[in-house]
Image (cartoon, rainbow, N blue to C red; front, side, top):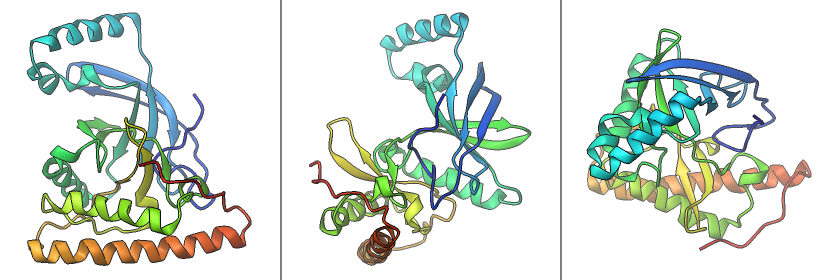
Length: 245
């Protein structure tokens, strides 16, 4: 398995390292191999599940059962995982932040896989809590590959991401560029997805959220503008491409 463009992979020159994981998720024992997102995020593993004939057979049976209704997938999500997943383990002494991120995913259930990654569930990995998340793909905006849109094309995508989360009372507070990813959806359209919800805030009023969606978009776009200038100075700025809309 080769490292792929996902999440925080290769941000600001950081390098990913090979990683393996094994854990029990509900009724399934999972073994997976892949890479750390980068050396600044050793708790974030980008993995491909290693399947077997037995697991494939059981998975097929559950897929057949799923024809009876969504209750099967909701009760046994471990048997409906894609090949690629992200395993995000709680950082040392980050109990509160981990719980806050878990709450954010529950509040954002309606936009999981649209604005934020999909949460499949929580497991124990190396005696530590971990979230099993979807691999959103795309490119981190903090990398040259994720900075291929003009500012006027990027701005509405960033604003829409904030607006979607705010509609469910969740304010994304960690507005670094590496928490925003340029992703192509199933229809081939560009969108921005947000990650890292440990510092999400739920105490703002509707009026506050409407204001912060605009102010945070302005802040992120300021970072993006500076980022483009740095990439150009370092001679690694990629050619701009048209917005896929």
